Amino acid sequence: MKSYFPKDFLWGGATAANQVEGGSDIDGKGLSVSDVYIFDGDMPKEHWTDQWHMMTHKQVEEAQDPESKKYYPKRHGVDFYHHFKEDIRLFAEMGFKTYRMSIAWTRIFPKGDELVPNEAGLAFYDAVFDECLKYGIEPLVSLSHYEMPLYLVTHYGGWPNRQIIDFYVRFAETVVDRYRDKVKYWVTFNEINCVKHHPYVSVGIIEEGHPHIEQDKYQGAHHQFVASAKATAYIHRVIPDAQVGCMISYQLLTPYSCDPDDIQKTVEQQRTSLFFSDVQARGYYPAYAKRMFEEKSVILAIEDGDLAVIRENPVDFISFSYYMSSAVSAHPERLESAVGNLITGGIKNPYLPSSKWGWQIDPKGLRTALNQLYDRYQKPLFVAENGLGAEDTLASDGTINDSYRIDYLRQHIQQINEALHDGVDVFGYTAWGCIDIVSASTSQMSKRYGFIYVDQDDAGNGTKERSKKASFDWYKEVIASNGANL
Ligand code: BG6
Image (tube, rainbow, N blue to C red; front, side):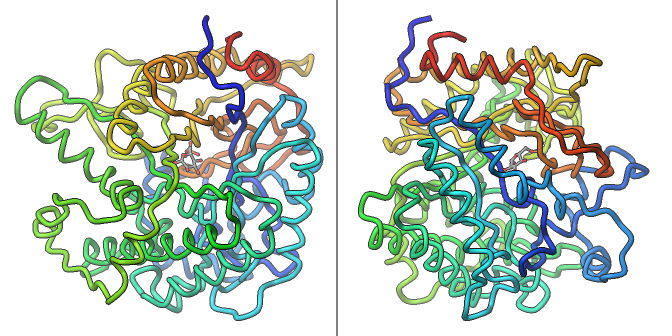
């Protein structure tokens, strides 16, 4: 295949602190919103993802009880906290040019409203970045990846409270000052558009019994836009050659049929995601937001200066996660839904296969997505997440033959190559969960994405030993050939 990948293309992998690190009771770390999720094998499967969407007051309360006997997988991750040197060495062996990771806010400000940061937390990330840089791996840091301090939810009500802007900005400024010589690429909020579907983990609202959820979701999002713009301004001031990105979950939506109602509904639904990158990339609320807010009875409290700071600080690049596409119908009651669909609960597309978790696999959709986003913004694009969650089997000889994952990744990377040929400016690709980690939506360990297998089960049992899967050597060759050998 002729490769259109530029020679400095940033190949790599991605994780998030709350899914990989563990060590949640070490060195002063506080509890984050993600540390509250349990894994309960007795829970019916269809509720695993629901749990992520909908948090209850009781769960939050129980999770803060030091006597709780429940298993909270995201407090344990895969113990990257103690294995990072080994893990980064393996990333380097694959030839990673970049590693996308997040800084756990709760390691730096355990409750979120402190004035003085936790030195032990800062020192940990110094060590992680030094390890990356030792191998020439450029860190790309998400400041917030579903891991705001739980205390800011229980004591301040989450992002609908304007005070959170200052706490976030203090956190951002602290880490930017500390790592200014080590980190050039920053993302302010992971999947900022996902507040629509899981407001607890995105903006810290407990939906149960909430009287005006839509209002608070968008008020929280407005505060995130302001916070993101202030962080962007600061990063640009302190690190002159820094690149700051927004990050959305981009699930390509296609009309189920050529019925004009299906087409109109698709446009409207896709805009509910694009709304977020529209604000962050262009620097202003799009015209269609007025009607969208009217129809949701949302009236935003916007203070003097908010719109100016958003306008003056648009992001430099657009990053996004892409796992699947989904069909949209104006008459969904007549059709089968795409099962287990994390993001929008769309309609099953009869042309596409699905993963075991019901995520519809659509590699060509990635080319379309890249073209759509580039046509819309003309800003550099970064594929921040992509991958196949699957159950892997460790054979008795210690090998793991994940040929299905290789197929998935190959087909998606081929489509990035097509998009590059189309003229789209894509500057990097980080495969999600480059090492097996705890699933965000189901808290399972058995939904694996990695090139590196971790010996750990859903209940946290196992040696945590790392082994290379077949995809490890495959990805190494992809990187070495700059995308020519797929
Ligand atoms: C994205 C998140 O939504 O999807 C990641 O940014 C997450 O945190 C990834 O892990 C895959 O989802 P899951 O539920 O399979 O882990």
